[in-house]
Length: 107
Image (cartoon, rainbow, N blue to C red; front, side, top):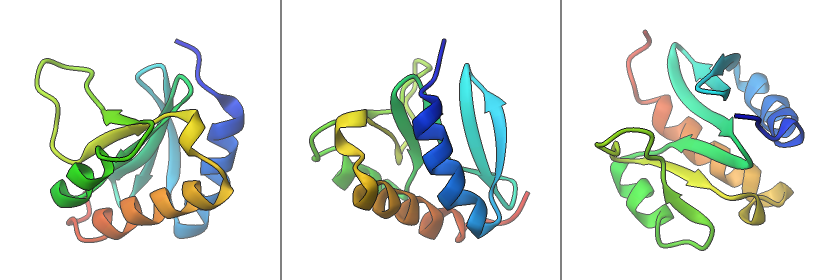
């Protein structure tokens, strides 16, 4: 599956300033922070790892759906469609993910 390279470049620009590293995965890209996945790009959507509470709140927003590539969606994982990703909101989304991932033990 192709992924939005422009969105990926925008994510990379922000996430790498926090020390995140980029990896190709599941037909798109993923960004790892201290060994934990922070965010990624799949198709035209941004994937985010949020706390369970932030993930539930995010699902109430337009253009957000569960990140579900298996039979059992994981709590807190969401996909934000391209329509919901202007410059300001992209940074806000990524900061929410970073705030949660920084609470996890390094891998």
